Image (cartoon, rainbow, N blue to C red; front, top):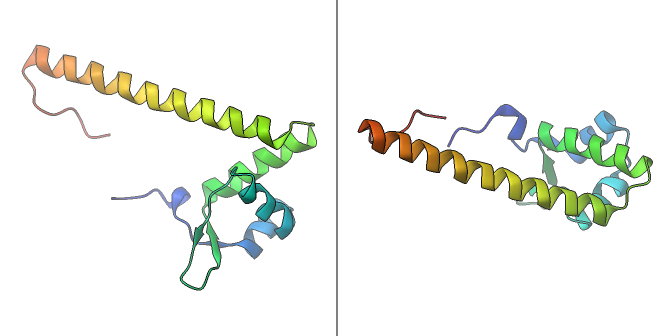
Length: 109
């Protein structure tokens, strides 16, 4: 499976700290609150992606605006559900088009 460079977990917490201006403690707190999901190396070090860095900046901006972490998490869950529903809808439409025109597979995404 090819992963976009933005989604590869290759950035250390120290670099994330430098890129975002957040402290390591803040970054770990957002992980504890299930707002961010770094991968762990065999040695236990956290690894983040560029997408994670962007998300952390968004989270920090919302926190600065007074939004609570539980509200951010609810918003993230709603967005994930909508994305899943949109993907299912897209696949259903593609299947209907394929059936209508006698195709077996849709175009590669």
